[in-house]
Image (cartoon, rainbow, N blue to C red; front, side, top):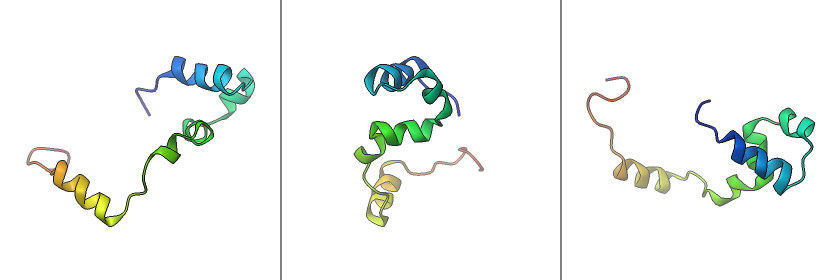
Amino acid sequence: MTGLDWPGLMRAGMHGIGLSPEDFWRLTPVELRIILGADAMMPPLTRARLEDLASRYPDRKGQMND
């Protein structure tokens, strides 16, 4: 996993919700996202949403496994 905003996550975890440094570092980034409520902001990936995303971001030749 790359590109994590560690300073921002540390501020949110330790300052925002009051985790101790030890508790913060015991969490995975996914667990911290759940505690912070970030996943609650994302709608579930339903078939309709998947189709909407696929139409907005179609596969193109030369990407990934082509």
